[in-house]
Length: 189
Image (cartoon, rainbow, N blue to C red; front, side, top):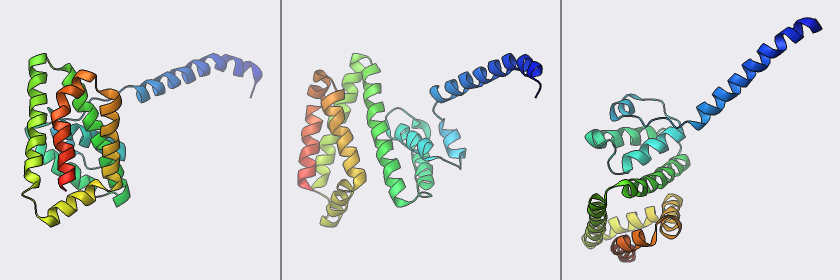
């Protein structure tokens, strides 16, 4: 290539490469808006990242409420396309995201709404504890097996991390009844 011609192309090439680098960085750093329920139901090809993100959002409160059951059914069908080990990893990541989204939503609520949400969490934990006594031995064994799976361990580790390092002292105090019920529920299994 002619050196004079190369010098003339050097600046436009450098500007073009810089622009491409900036656009690439923006594309990687900008978080996409979550999909709507209709978009989720229409989507047929999922990456593991997309699936864990959408499952995590679907598990969290106040998301996809209008078609939640349909969305969860569709996402579970998509999850079945992955090998068992990858499914467990995706579900664990989805639960991690759901727990963190739950905390984020809790913190953005006005105090009265926050109190209602915490009361609902505590009531739900109590109902789960009461329901354990009505389960058959086979059902208890299946739940215990799920809890002891690598996926269950990942969820427990994330819950412990959130309790010890993410929640404030006031949040831990407010959620203490639920924690006691959950611990007792596990003991009953």
